[in-house]
Amino acid sequence: MEPTTPPPLVLASASPRRSDLLTRLGLSFEVDPPHIPEDVLDGESPWQHAERLAREKAAEVQARHPDALILAGDTVVVL
View 1: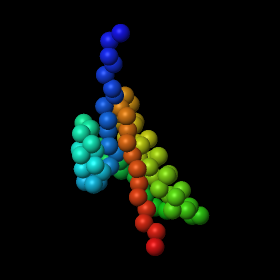
View 2: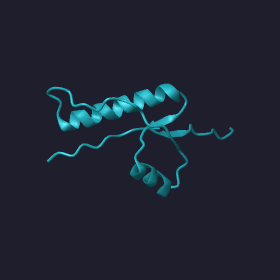
View 3: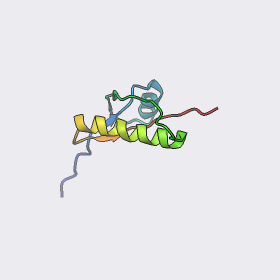
C-alpha cells in the first residue's frame, strides 16, 4: 500500500501569533484569512460568539480550499 499525502493545512487567520505557533511546531501551512463580520449577536455569550466565529471563518476558507484541512479559531477577551 502506498503512503497517502496528507491534505494541505490552511490557517484561516491573519494572526502572526497563530502563524508563529504553527511554524514552531514545524508544520507547513498556507495563510488565508477570512473576511466575515465579527459583531456579537444579541444574547450571544462570549463562548458562543467565539465558537460561531471560528466555525464561520473555517467555512468561508473551506469553500476556497475544498481539499484542505482548515484551522480556524477565535479569541474573545471578557473583562
